[in-house]
Length: 137
Picture 1 (cartoon, rainbow, N blue to C red):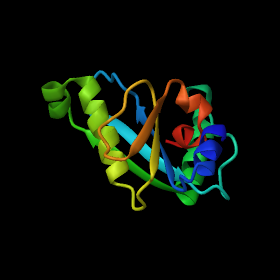
Picture 2 (tube, helix red, strand yellow; picture 1 turned 30 degrees about the vertical axis):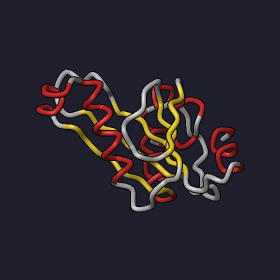
Picture 3 (spheres, one colour; picture 1 turned 180 degrees about the horizontal axis):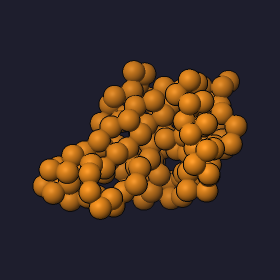
Picture 4 (cartoon, rainbow, N blue to C red; picture 1 turned 180 degrees about the vertical axis):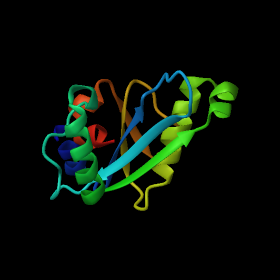
């Protein structure tokens, strides 16, 4: 939680984590999620989803949905073909953030690139293993 704690100490109350799901699929849309965790109800065991068992991911999914503000968004196959996979991923991330009921004041994104958001954002390489909100996404 060090990234979230540091941001909150600087006055950023609502922090969203963003990550894409399965970028580079053989077929289908690209999907991204944005999550704002409730600091009082952070599910135990959050980590990079690739390191978790399927059963643990499913359990965390239910806990996250019950304790956090979440939005899952997509970019279609047609958008991938028109934009390219990287730009379609950025579009799905942008849609996920825009779809949150509560608007974050800062967004932490897994990776080394940022979608266009119009709010303060930070890219964190390996963020899905370092930042709870990104792990939840």
